[in-house]
Image 1: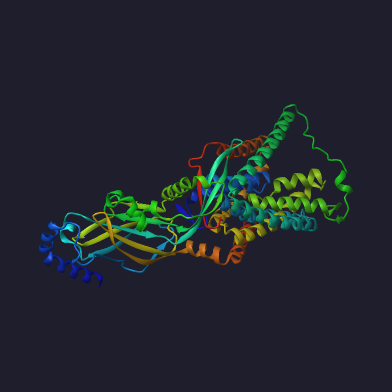
Image 2 (image 1 turned 120 degrees about the vertical axis):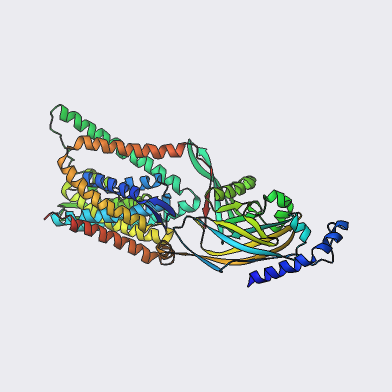
Length: 270
Length: 306
């Protein structure tokens, strides 16, 4: 359904392409009469089910630009960033120091809920798409993810270092992914974004966000919820451990009792 | 063949876990120890988070102590009454232990505390075992009969009030030291994931003067319940018992223990004890090195309220 709409936009554009291009050479960056660009995205489902032992996968998001300026499109002045933000959770970052020869956690900062995972795909490197201030305003990219400290334990002066550590650690364990070639235009104003899903992706409601930039300025955005549901035995166990912790604990003990008793019966000598 | 551990959130090679469980089970069968004090550090070396290693270790000890206690029950070398008094102290200790565990986890000092306690404990046990086995070897070389230390009949502990008669053990003893001993072991069960037999057994023999024949069975009897209780409380408060990991360890452990038992009955003790002592010391040293060596990243991250 969405694809048909995108093609309609494409045809409409190609028929009009000559005239605006001429007008534009006179007034390069001001086109008050041209309609504002829009961006549309779509995924094949609103819910993805993954086995919890999967080793990571790719999520493909299709999208289209509405009302783009054909000349700017042709010379690559439009850039797209697509991100998948995981559900938000609070986190604590700790810093070790050597105390009496042993490494001890001495300082910590607790952060307000922030996305647990973050996967980004873009047409180019972020610094080539827009200036840092522009990216910061719209909140695209890891470094622009708001990280609000909520409680400090002797580390207020190192807030910047702690934030960097948070992002670095997330990147190290695969929860923050980026692919600066992940968005490709497949047909003038149609694009395909490939987002890398980490193996340890948290389940819950994720948000797909698309940002459209024109010559370094942000022009349009779009968000779409996407539920990630983990399936399989492993997830059943995780759910049981968190939702029915007493029953789960009793089950673990019973399993041990059966194993221990079974062994003593099986290996009984007489 | 890799398998995903849902609570540890880790993919592991199932054969390595089986091997670990079997090796520790073998040693525990051979020397009559529970093996929890080796399982937990080995899991930590294999990148299992210490929180999960401790809680899962306790769960695994339930299985190994149960199969041991059944054997002693059949032989009649188990004092239920004595075990129950120890257990009362143990349950209180395990509750306090889980509370300390959660508190340390919130402070971010849990991993360090677990490692430090293990370094101290393994260092002491390893050194004592090594000294004991070396002196036994020396005596054997001089052709002297190994003299078992005969503990004296009474010490100050036997002057304490609230005495109780334990018929099976043929002793008349105050319940206070028993409750205290149970309590200390209970705390260690929760914080370290050990059964505590390696502390309980010498304390019962040398401090409380309980006849040796009932000591191992009775300590295993109370360990079943303390570790079972610790497992349930850990599951409820820290969500850190990994049933998949525990099950693999249990299966391998109980089978390994049976073979260890048979081998242990045939081989000479001193050299084996010296080897086990060296192994225990090596594990302790390895943990100590990790505490001292500069970490790859001095920052760490914990999701959620911890």
